[in-house]
Amino acid sequence: MTIEEIQNQIVDEFSMLDDWMDKYAYLIEIGNGMAPMDEAHKTDDNLIKGCQSRVWFYAELRDDGRLYFTADSDAIITKGIAGLLIRVFSGQPPKDIVNANLDFIDKIGLTQHLSPTRSNGLLSMVKQIKYYALAYAGK
Amino acid sequence: MFDVNQIRKDFPILREQVYGKPLVYLDNGATTQKPRRVVEVMNEYYLRYNSNVHRGVHYLSNKCTDANERARTVVRDYIHAGETEEVIFTRGTTESINLVAYTFGEAFIHAGDEIVVTEMEHHANIVPWQMLCERKGAELKVVPFKDNGELDMEAFAGLMNGRVKLVAVAYVSNVLGTVNPVKRIIDAAHAVGAYALVDAAQAIQHIPIDVRELDCDFLAFSGHKIYGPTGVGVLYGKRELLEQMPPWQGGGEMIKEVRFEKTTYNELPFKFEAGTPDFIGVIGLGEAIEYVKSVGLDEIAAHEHGLIAYAMERIRQVPRIILYGDAPGKSSVVSFGLEGMHHFDLGTLLDKMGIAVRTGQLCADPVMSHYGVTGMVRASLAMYNTEEEIDALCAGLKKIERIFKM
Image (cartoon, rainbow over all chains, first blue to last red; front, top):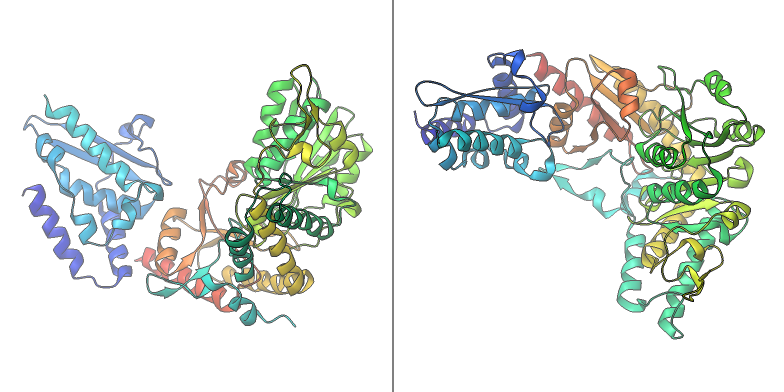
């Protein structure tokens, strides 16, 4: 699936949850269900700055020319949000990631997490993913 | 007669809704809301009388100058200082402490001297002293606290010796709510020839303060934590000390005469008030204190004592709750966590319920280290909070606890 298609799928899933509490419960579920991150990748270099919770993001370019992400956080909601981003971006070509428009965040009602002053890192996470993609896009 | 529902009417913001839910504002330790009359008096001065203080010969300037100086007498009386010259307006507690660190520090601290703080201080009462110690080759000593949030007074006594020149201590801990025995601490400091500074940022809005009875040498607080505006605070200092301290910032207001050969400095308190002060903020602070007096600080304290006892009792019943700070007689702060949950998750979900709390390190990393946590959630109370709001918090916490158990 393309980035666009996955985003639409997430928007569909969240649209079935009308209560905000259910949305967060779903995020928590996503966070809990994530594949564990390799401890070796939980380094200060992979730590995302500007978050009240600690978030690590790691990217790996595989032979298929696509970028694969893993992430972890000590806060479960943050981890769930990271999980959504991984679902959207992991396994995509770097060029598509660089050019991607992230409208699903707004559509599922998580925009408040996008504010740079919220220091919870969604914006920083997206930035970091794009940096990784930019670094690999030229290769 | 104290009636919290009447009080709440004085604070328009308390009627606001967030995410379609009534606002439950429990972040008063960070800043308190403003009663209408504080905002109105500031508006009035901006709209009708605005003019720079201590300078003009004209009507408006005199009007603002009078109001500014009247606020100084209001502060003087509120903290029971002897003289208005001992009340210096600053930008807030942090600036007040830095002023002392720079000017008292310049005149009184030398290599080999010791400065004593406690493990439960706000960063603003740690870092200025660390910087001073670095400049002067002095040493910072730390009084530890016990797990229940009480200061270890034996350890404190053990740190008192002739090398100590200053003891800087919070009256009330911004994380633990502990009301420290500042009078005992001040007396002990004086007994070894040291001076004492009290950080009253979390006390000024809750506890009657008498600087002469305490006999503290300095006391600092912020206007915005006592229902006044942001950007204005107070440093109280004993006159004989303030006289001996060199000025800090140079500029207008703090000078008597400027000659290129030598400039002479103004009298107290203006010696420490360089530049155009935030006089409208000062006027707002005066009004806020008048408001607190009109409600009655004793009545406020009684209401808040009842509320904190109720809050501690109720929060304790939340499954998996971890409480930080349970010192006897603690003030209006409850810091907590839920077992296995990140403070940020808790704060995020409480926010969605319309409940405003503080999360994170609470500007007190050493307290976090003491308990081995990366952060906490803090609910902090003010005169307008109610038992219903505590119930809302507890209900919210129980709901969150259930979500996380799923």
